[in-house]
Amino acid sequence: MTKAAVFGTGSWGTAFAMVLADAGCEVTLWGRRAGLVDAVNERRVNPDYLPDVELPPSVRATTDAAEAAADAEFTVLAVPSQTLRGNLEKWRPVLRPDTVLVSLMKGVELGTAKRMSEVIGEVGEAEPERVAVLTGPNLAKEIAARQPAASVVACRDESVAQRLQSACHTPYFRPYTNTDVVGCELGGAVKNVIALAVGIADGMGLGDNTKASLITRGLAETSRLGLAMGADAHTFAGLAGMGDLVATCSSPLSRNHTFGTNLGRGMTLSETIAVTKQTAEGVKSCESVRELAHRHHVEMPITETVVGIVHDGKPPHVALKELMSRSAKAERV
Ligand SMILES: NC(=O)c1ccc[n+]([C@@H]2O[C@H](COP(=O)([O-])OP(=O)(O)OC[C@H]3O[C@@H](n4cnc5c(N)ncnc54)[C@H](O)[C@@H]3O)[C@@H](O)[C@H]2O)c1
Ligand SMILES: O=P(O)(O)OC[C@H](O)CO
Image (cartoon, rainbow, N blue to C red):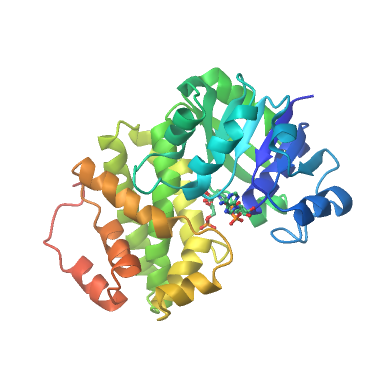
């Protein structure tokens, strides 16, 4: 039986542990808090993040990283992106040297502007062929309800992607492989920034034309950045690009979309942070995505607008006016 470890007992770590178990894996979940770990082991439930979901018996939990990592063919990382480096430094000594490190995270590190697979490679001392990314339109609550969805497993080594694909393929979860790790990761991280923008527009009471325009031009700026960073253009038309962007920008389940909606309705940043219980990656990653845009000399006006509203305190109606009054241009630029 394939053994997998999942580090992180939040919504997606827990839901993906269930997917792996449903696909036939034996899964150990690592969590920080003993109370939550006990609830998983004794009541088969994660009361804090997925209280309505009964976890399969082949999911066990522990607070001991060494116990979780032992024998794991796949080591899945599902903590907030900005905490990955610090956590992985602690976990590295107990990781199996041949384990495949799998990122579920959709963020870009502040300060370094590194993608999560880059942080994993560096801190986990893992060659790119041993680092994979799972991304796509995968709202955790829908997956946990076993609603059908597709996803992408990306790894530079396609055979590794295929091994992970078969380890998490279930009747309701259909992963595709891709070797474009850069494109897949950027799709997942930048869509959170665009979802903040769409949420802000929704909160301001704007309609579907605005939403469709932000989604489409958001995908254009994601693709521009991706191409400058060596990604494959096709990736952005796929599940990791268009697919995840549409799901996140349309769904009230999205934390990024909801965060934006609260800002658009007039809440301040600190009020919005206070009512947000889970990780909304775009809030921090919008700054690192903008840093990548500057480094690669790519125009990302929606990302700039989101940074302006979220971090510089620009009123949404002022920022929107500035976005709309930029000089006119051809669509394919
Ligand atoms: N929830 C989703 O629908 C979903 C879907 C796809 C991808 N993702 C991505 O997965 C990643 C994890 O998201 P999530 O939804 O599971 O988040 P979450 O907010 O539900 O849970 C985060 C988990 O990390 C833990 N945590 C927080 N700070 C920590 C720290 N300093 N050290 C160790 N653990 C810490 C929390 O206790 C919690 O268990 C994010 O990058 C997110 O973008 C989420
Ligand atoms: O809730 P969000 O905004 O983090 O989005 C969740 C997933 O990334 C959707 O695929």
